[in-house]
Length: 414
Ligand code: ASP
Ligand code: MG
Picture 1 (cartoon, helix red, strand yellow):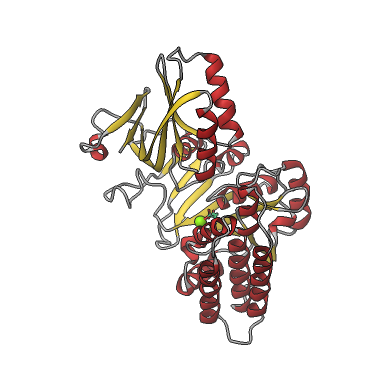
Picture 2 (tube, rainbow, N blue to C red; picture 1 turned 45 degrees about the horizontal axis):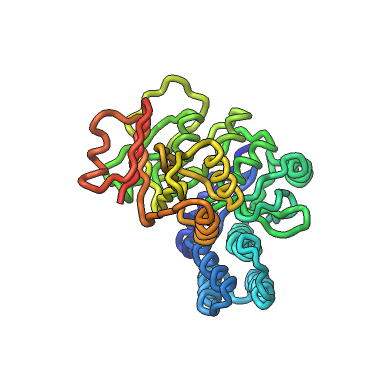
């Protein structure tokens, strides 16, 4: 049994939905298909959530959300199809949520709103496959995938989820199911999300629980590349990758795979194939337990980074007590550190620009330290670095922090 996953780019308009459903018709007769939100809908819902949370007008975003899906539905189905009323039900649920006052927990509010992207996409794709006579059962993954309540970065409760998933997905060798990636529910039944781009992780989690023979992630790139082609155009595809390399690349910010995806697959030695829905003859990249592969330099970039420099107010040394205090503040604010560096009197960290989290953490840090920060930076990592490899990407840019280990070079640049 194979778990196939399709992301936003493969279902960004009616035409791509047709292409993706053709792939399903011809290549996927059984098992599970995991789908994320269509196109850039998650970004749109993020903006909507922020406005709702700040008591600003979100009606433009809400209209865009409805129109986007209705346009696609209208292009795919006859006017009297049941999908119209099913979609309307979801719109009404979303509106009902938005008409209530937001709580003070932004992450919670986010998770109650953003999953509507996946709810709509899976409704549309499953209805369309059935309309094309490729029979598929739509499963609401929120009933099965149970998580803790760390909203926006929820952790899967493997025990409960395994029982649910095994009970629901039956006869996978003959039946085809379709379900949402990225979302789950906590023990109180509130929606949770697994972190941006988390649909790959859902596919991996289902494969792990059900002992799938393989996971296939369909992308708009030929496979895993030595760099994001949008950034470095003349870049090569990697044919084979070990789990360890894949984990490292994802950790440093390679967007092709979600960082959490690999571990469950590695644990059960389930291969992951990353392939293109545009070039179907191309087999893409296979991630498996390979040894002794030699890889060329791989370039990874994280945008929108913030450098925070922390100094004791009295110019004393940074000692272990300071570090543990600083980290407790970071942990409380759920901030992940992408790079750190310390000197005698200062400690610097590089983090993603996470609006409220960074602001809160800086306010707290300022009670005890002098805190400076620089934003709008890029963190470039070169894995399998060889001398001179950085010339390709640094060209005279200002380097604020630089770090080297045996095979990895990292540059924080403006
Ligand atoms: N729709 C979610 C996102 O865009 C999850 C995913 O695409 O995997 O982050
Ligand atoms: Mg996506």
